[in-house]
Length: 86
Image (cartoon, rainbow, N blue to C red; front, side):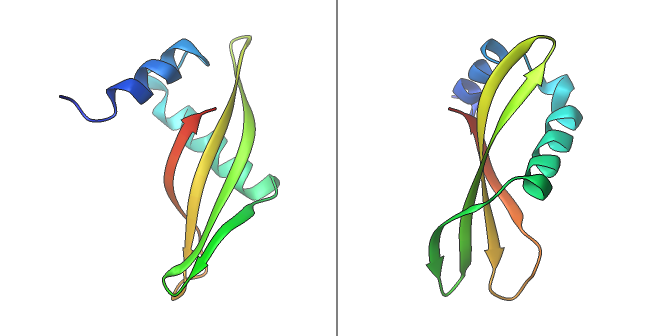
């Protein structure tokens, strides 16, 4: 079984994205992280886990995407841990 294949199907069906759109998705994720409010969902010794929800629009199609981030306690920049269509 290929890992992540169901997530890929949802990204294709909702906003119409394929692997060829990886740079577009990356750009949208970074923009959302800069411009949207992050919600801290967990604080632990390892760091803070946050989510950022945003509307992704591509070619007239829309999808709400949730991105999950961690800001490690030893770092100041967030790291993407996951993203998926809600």
